[in-house]
Length: 111
Image: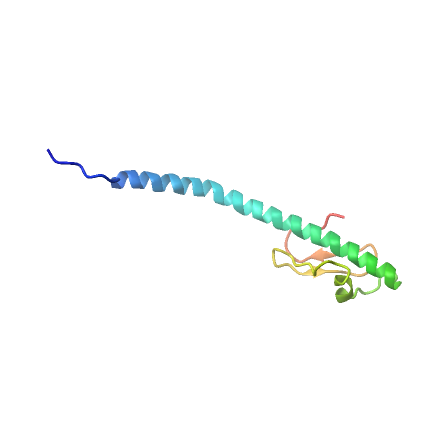
């Protein structure tokens, strides 16, 4: 009789690779969706902070409704200049009812 050598057969390795591929096919779309949701939430929070800083700047400097916002001055009222995690650009907009916006698709503020 031949002595069988220790190790895995090709079929066993292929089964393990197929199982890992199946698990990856299930997990990766969920990971991408959660990442996108997290980016939207972070952006909404940034927009809320920009709005608060903009309003505080307007009150302290006596700005009127419709006045153009000095973004550098408003950033001074924030802990750090906000950056959209999805590479969008923030538009501070004029003083008044117009809230700050983000150019990234689907990113809206919660005020």
